[in-house]
Image (cartoon, rainbow over all chains, first blue to last red; front, side, top):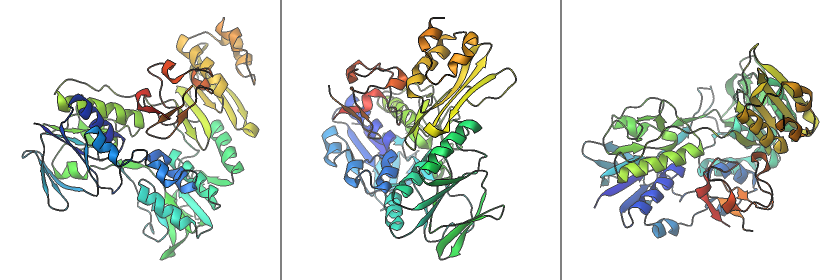
Length: 405
Length: 52
């Protein structure tokens, strides 16, 4: 009987294990996890820090769940070495684990930029439950927090610290927040929302050093400005955890390079989720992890049976409680584009439509829930809206008038 | 009508509310959501949801 081994216990690892268990009931199927915990919901870690979600609730699956699914899970069992030619793993405790089919689903690691003083007490990154526990514990006894990095996770972390009562400042490298989803005007509305929550924001902020002696005292920017802080969270991105693949001599670029079957450069070794680089892309998003895990699992059970052709990123995301939808050429600039904007910072709302030859080719919609679907339809249908530019910017447009056009 | 929960992030689909920003009107049961509908918070596919 074939033995299936999965390294990693996140969304990709667990989804793949479930797929294999369904396709091959009774299979010799194992998950090896470096962390001591059964599967937990990583996206909920900021809410856990804030005290909004109890620790018990982020463990969605009881430990018995694995067994019920026919999966043997080995916790606190980091893998030290992979030998693809011998088809075996060596665990950190020395045990040898042979496999027939292997999936690398080791995920990503928080990336710490080379900032002076990053090793001081009170400096954290946020990726694992242990990170979240440490931040929550430390935040209890301090007053001022700085978050380096104004991406989605950084902003959620800032909100969590604010909920705990800290004074919070976010330092963002880019000239404005979330430049892939927002334009400058939209980012200004988001900043207004953050300021109203009591979160300060500084953009164009190049962090140079974390100050203090032993414990954190503050953060200094390259332009000399200093921000006092007792706690610093660096939220400056996730990097694929490629250590095992690299040691094994697999092809590694930004992530572990996989082909359209999600096989790595070694036979019978697959990769999925945040560790994998498919078609030159490390996706780092939940839907890609799920899709890749299913394709990899199908090929582990029946080689060559499934192919992966990429995942479209979700167009809507939640940021500090606001709903943000970015469609098509949302941040494109150009003289061939007519940009229509409606900013309502008071209500935290923003609507930007980009028109080319009378057709909507891009949109940014912040807290515009009821208008998102009609605008998406106009875009998909390629409706000529050039006669309705005033109506498109009304607070509550009568969409029927446009769609009937 | 039953609520459904996203296994990945904990989002709860409430049929009474629907998912208006993606054209799903209030009163739509989970079973009637299109197959390509996904979690509004994390993007997980419809089959990653379980009944609460």
